[in-house]
Image 1 (cartoon, rainbow, N blue to C red):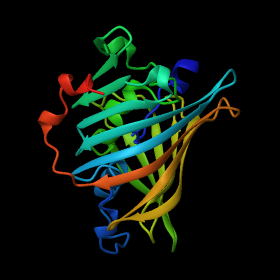
Image 2 (image 1 turned 180 degrees about the horizontal axis):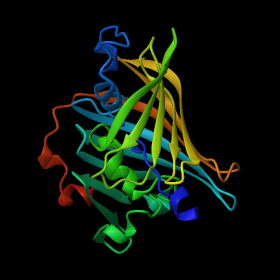
Image 3 (image 1 turned 45 degrees about the vertical axis):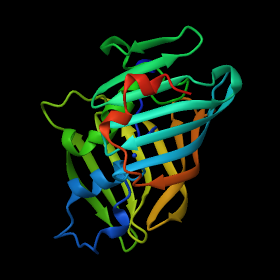
Image 4 (image 1 turned 60 degrees about the vertical axis):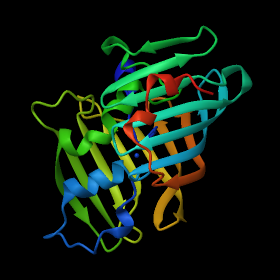
Length: 254
């Protein structure tokens, strides 16, 4: 169970996750495209491209640490993030291209490709795993969707894995607000259908023409004293980046 609990997503980071939500027209139960809605939620922080300064606080039973990071993204498949602070970890970086991940360790000047056996490992010591970084933005491809409940204010959507999908979660349930159309929380269930993680989305703001939650809290439910909190300090969309920016050479630059 401990291994399953440590296999985390999101989006989110990347932690995550493009906000075209603001542009979607009103929908009814008959016209709502659940797959498109989930895709928008999982990519809300990316846009066509994005640049962000983020703070990540990781609290465990044994220690509490805070990282300041700079991140760039291109659609759903390209992501680069570098640590700015603390000084002893400055320059540590992660590159995601499609479904592959590399880490750069400046102290030994080495680029290490994350092997399949390490995909369940913790990313940057947080409650997010390498597997989350690869698969979080592809929930719309790997799951099927059912509308569980609709009120005047929100939708609850159940996601079950497709038969041929190599995924960690036995089930995911999204709660999405209507006005504005942003995620409120996401529950993750293991293969025994036990709820093991929740992500909360808070501090909703307007960034340019987009509406996004600026704080994400990842809660490992089997360890209620622990959490990982992401806060966006600065967020800019649509910078004109291309795939060449997300290179192994760029991974080493500081």
